[in-house]
Amino acid sequence: MADRRNSPRRYLGPWTIVAALFIVGSLLLILLDTTLKNSSLKDAATGPIRAVIILIVGSVIARVVEGRILTRSLTSLSARQRTITGFAVRLLLYLGITLAIFAGLGIGLSSFLFGGAFLTVVIGLAGQSMLSNLFGGVWLVLNQPFQVSDSISFVTWQYAVLPPTYPHGPLRPSHSGRVTDINLMYTTIITDEGDPLIIPNGVLAQAAIVNKSRSGTRRVSIRFDTPVNISPNDLKAKLLDDLGNWDRTPSVELADMATESYSVQVAVWSRESDDRVRDRILQSAWKAIAELNKTETQSTDMQDTP
Image (cartoon, rainbow, N blue to C red):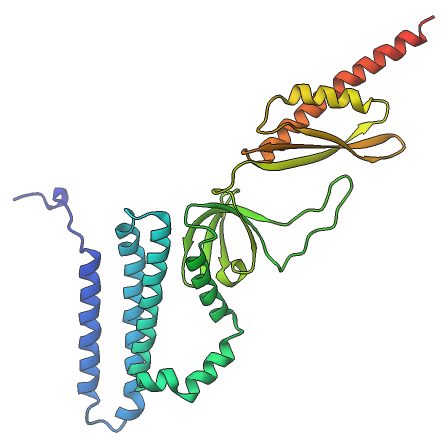
């Protein structure tokens, strides 16, 4: 007898599962109508029970389609095609489930679309987050400010520019990461720290978005303080020599002046991450200030020597 433990397991395909769920749901609806056919509670109970069955079966089918069919069937498409196709399939799928639920409740399509109750609901929900996120998702898919797998940074209107703190300039509270999914209500981003960030589509539709995957070189600047005894011209020459070559010539400028120090702002153009660029600038600044301080100290000692 063959050892069954070593025999390969056969799993049902996703389309088989969808078909099986559809058949089970249909049989449950037929059984419901047959059971309550002669019951006095038929009119009151049939509609809600039918709607619950459609909701449960439809939700499971939607999860199977999203989790097992879309992820496998769209791999050969481009990022733009995957985003549009996936969003359209989800939208049609959930719209179909919604219409089926209303049909189960005995509400016809014409009543659903043109009835006063439907218009009242739409007007009431127009300013709510659900429709805002849905329409925001449609806007994101149609206009494509970013695609799945793009690296982006965004600043939302809900957060104002932070006031400057010495010696820094104004700070923009942006969030950065890689887009992994755009669904009907939310967009998922894996942040630079590795955390999943789920943002409502309505927020992103109104956000200022920087698509780093489409950008070339960008300006990165940093400001730091320097002792007043160090010559600005000597510091600038040292910094430019140590910073080396970038996509464009770096700029070194005086930004502010105090009694015992002055502020220097260095700006470079680069394709690297902001943190890496700032590290390189600060390393060069520390090296230049240390060398100039040493030279200044030696010069002072020589002058003091009789």
